[in-house]
Amino acid sequence: MKKIIITTLFIAFYFLPINLKAEVKPISEGNVDAKIKIVVFESLTCSHCANFHKNVYPNLKEDFIDKGNVYIEFKNFPLDMAAMNASKIAHCKNDGNSEILHYLFDNQRQWLKGKTIEELNTNIKNFIEKSDFNLDIDVCLSNKEAEDHILEDRIEGVKKFKVDATPTLIINGEKFDNPTNYKKLKKFLEKLI
Image 1 (tube, rainbow, N blue to C red):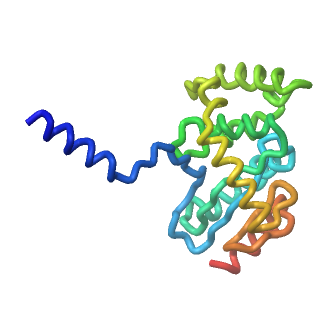
Image 2: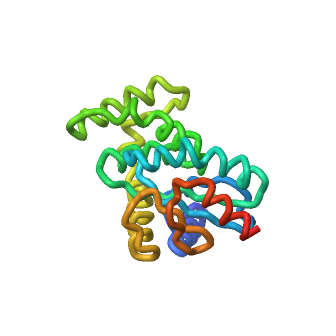
């Protein structure tokens, strides 16, 4: 009987499609069925991206995302190793929530300090440890699945949308010029509703 059970388990596991690689959830907000889909390619060390999060995103959220008219996905386009590591931290909980991402952009000047990657990593680690996120930064930074996801975002940006600067907004599959001008963006989105 024991031999039959072991053989059955072996056969079952042998033929099951096994994917042990954990899927990294994209960071997004809004109604996934919204008529307007926005993808933002950004780098956490980019001051223009921080400006987008400070001056454009709050209005976009209030006027469109919270009303269910826009679904937004924040894609990774790291410009350097510090941005790569910050992106890993933003994805660390792998819950698709944008809270850590916004926190890093809102406080970019506080953690983005140092002349070497080691200094930058120490600064971001110290900064995050003072927050309420309860993250193990060493685990976040060594997450290979998150790193692959981040690099895949960047490759997609270049190949599919010819992204060459951050932030880059893609609205319903088309590149939008001047993403830091909210008045222009609002007028464009209103026409799509």
